[in-house]
Image (tube, rainbow, N blue to C red):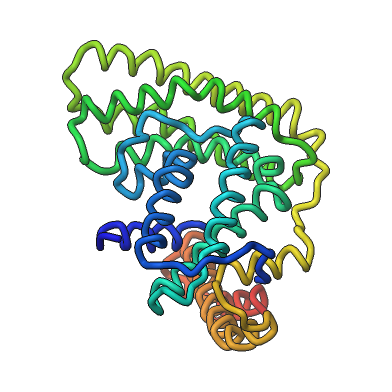
Amino acid sequence: MPRCRCNTFFAVLCLIPLALPAFAQTSASPGQWNSLVDDFLDQELFPNNPTLATQLGVHDFDAKLEDFSRNGIGRRIAGLKKFEARTVALDPKGLSQMETADREMLLSAIRSELLSLQVIRTWEKDPDTYSTGAANSIYVIMSRNFASPDNRLRSVVAREKKFSQYFAAARANLKNTPKIYSEIALEQLPGTIDFFEKDVPAAFADAHDSTTKADFAESNAAAIAALRAYEAWLKSDLLPRSNGDFRIGGETFRKNFYMTIWSRRRLTACWKSAWPTCTKIRRNLRALRMRSTLQSQRQRCSRNFSPCIPRPISSCRNFAILLTA
């Protein structure tokens, strides 16, 4: 596999958040492994994750948007299972140490994604998946000058034209949503709408093609309308019936944990090794909160007392300590 493809493959595995099934194995050669990786990237990962493809510099799918329809999710699951079987069937004995590690990482990434799609099912629970996903699909196009403003704007138009179908899938998918998820999505949506109203047009102020600019004016207005309609639906429909549980359960958490960190260490061992750092962070945050509260109290004292009267800094400090105790 060429070096650039190796780098892309490693980047992909880092961005995608272990008993092996009983598949018959064949001894793998480096060429077979490289071919499998190329097929996974070109046939499965990039076509089904066009926003990620754009982010990684693969621009063959800039006019596409993620397919969250039931049929689309079903095709994604089937594709992942196919590549899981192909990967397991390759006996790592013929691979280098690095390729063997890559094989394990790929299996963990595939299985983590299958767990997310089939068991955790975020696409059924988190409405922010769709609104933030829509914004990110445009942000990855406007954030880098990988093509002329006109060409990138055409990709924006193509993606925005798919928003109607995209949010229709959201309405069909979302059910049994945790209330906190719906509330967070509603908190985020005003900023997302503002992003489309102000930031996206400003990012393409240098575009010159009049036809493309006219198409964008139409598609962006439709995108904003779709987001406002989605926000109204969340408030009036989804939020009142958001009674789901955000917890995924201990067993599912453990499975996802091991797949995500690519380690066979016991969860308790990982927790013990991380605990000193967690304690240090909590201590630093507590000190920061105390300083912030003290500064706020000093400012309040400065406003409430005349300059000729000594400021009761010690009282403010004592009050801040009581607040943070």
